[in-house]
Picture (cartoon, rainbow, N blue to C red):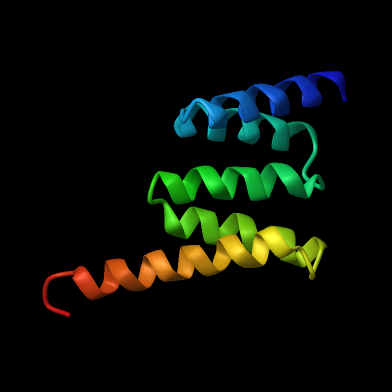
Length: 95
């Protein structure tokens, strides 16, 4: 749990600095240690949103909502992911 906490805090620090790629990597490391901790998924979803990786963000939120079906952050970030995917679809050539 110490290593988990350290990695999570490092991820949070990267987010504060706007280093979303590095932060996402730290949260991914956390997940190898604990797959049940929802906050690292919602945090990584935030990083993915910032990186325009909407599909990945949606997947992380779906995972959280399977564990905690009333997680507000997961609902909100999944909505942002859906919105991003809609905008992307609309702006694709030939649509």
